[in-house]
Image (cartoon, rainbow, N blue to C red; front, side, top):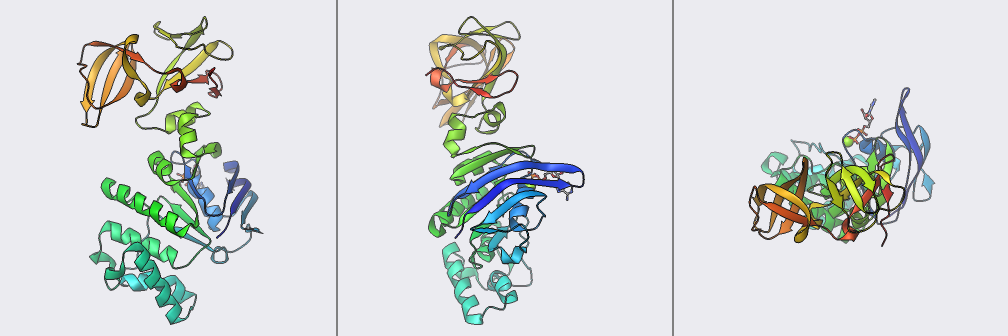
Length: 354
Ligand SMILES: Nc1ncnc2c1ncn2[C@@H]1O[C@H](COP(=O)(O)OP(=O)(O)O)[C@@H](O)[C@H]1O
Ligand SMILES: [Mg+2]
């Protein structure tokens, strides 16, 4: 097993720089997810770790060794892609052993490793089948098996679940997590899906436009997003935002003139801010911000309420059911600790008074 150190790494294609100095230290055995919108540079960074792209600046070390100029096959990594195309004419056993045969490992060693990986992945009964005789989830497991048999120091995943349907994706997600708990191999996992990143990783690195916006344990990102970008990206349904001007100590005047009374003073300079509050952190109260209900969406376990404060649409998620009905005026409240304030200019977080 191994650490991975990414030190001020840059990547340019011709004149165009797409990764602008990224530094991430990954501990031995850690599961780190790189997450961000399409085009932010996740795959490029992963491919630089794998050795599939040149590094334009900075350093990547796997274990003690700087690998900038080490060939992919000598990096002790195994990568699983979104398009994990199995060889259609080979059965599962042959697919899983392919890379080892290429490396000319002894037959007995290959058999032992394939058998072991098949047991870990629950593929023992399927070893003689061809890919077309497998379900999507089973094929994905074989792709994982191909990586496991190589016994790498680091696993690299690039959106490995994106081609699966929603239900299977959730199932494979938890299988992956269990696998990591069992094998404990250092893992870098790329996804655009924040739920996948949050549920799988020990630490999440949020990328935006070729830079790291924030990294930390999943719940740190959820509890204390350091920028508007992270606040908007992490959480589902997404955080509600209110742009406005702070007046007095604790009043936010929205652009349509509506005034929101806040339960605590806004820290820092007055002026323009964005207030954020998650749908699940708003509750219905006797007193609070008056809002007119527009839509009620029950799922049984919870209910999403869409309401309007003036022009402003607010989403509220309540556990269980609600008596509220469309057209009715409700009152919305949140605990002070659940309010997030971001600077109107920089978009950076301002810490609320405790
Ligand atoms: N071979 C290439 N040549 C030029 N630009 C590229 C190349 N590969 C990726 N890019 C650009 O680099 C940026 C990051 O791409 P990528 O790492 O694939 O993003 P992500 O995986 O986060 O969706 C994008 O703007 C993309 O267009
Ligand atoms: Mg990508």
